Length: 301
Image 1 (spheres, rainbow, N blue to C red):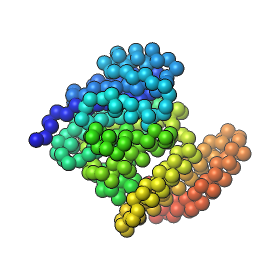
Image 2 (image 1 turned 90 degrees about the horizontal axis):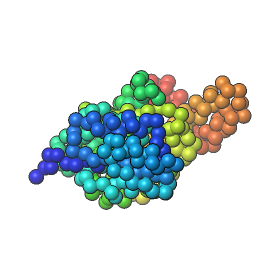
Image 3 (image 1 turned 30 degrees about the vertical axis):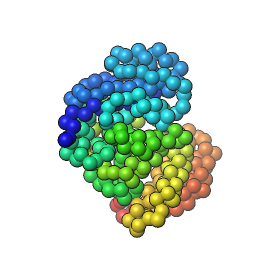
Image 4 (image 1 turned 180 degrees about the horizontal axis):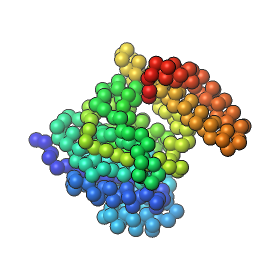
């Protein structure tokens, strides 16, 4: 028998009472799907009382713990949650009103699925302008997920709690790309389904952790190579998917380095610009040419 109204546990990990967290929690309270609970994990915030105050204003439970990173904080939140489904919301992002309703509906239509995911778009710091539209689609075979042909992140998934626990949750040793590691492990265990009516706003601002592009690119590379090794022997389709994902990361490294170098040039810091280019040459020597060739063919990541 299908569960028509499962409880969704929303885990919000934070290490600060950010200027955006009130809006983030308000977007959960405004969901058209009301069967949810919110667990805010204070991961060593300097002002825990401020975190507790904003959480309690929105009816959320609060867990205070020493700083251990976002992966460990999310795991702690899931451990305290009671829902059969779990969703993750960053303290600076927000949900559109039907985000949970769409995700739950996808599970009801596909009771064998272990993950549902929706579109995620990038908005500016004020949350007023869309910088990049959500382009997620229903390419969600294991090979599609490994190759990262559609954007699936912690912020736009809902996962069955039993599947999350079966794969061991997030890897607390990872400080970057911990969601990629989780998603790769989940993709080996069961079916993903797309919830096209859901939408998440990812807020782009100066404090985003994705700004640390060197650390992020290196972490993605290590995770992909480890999963490829652990999945051996690979069939041709999965081997090609890992290669595609690694090349995608090399292009990301070059794109990030060039963007940082241009900023350094504008700020009259040529040594910093040169350092970025030198890092990219060492980390991903073929990434620049791969990116230029794809652009010449009109292919965009």
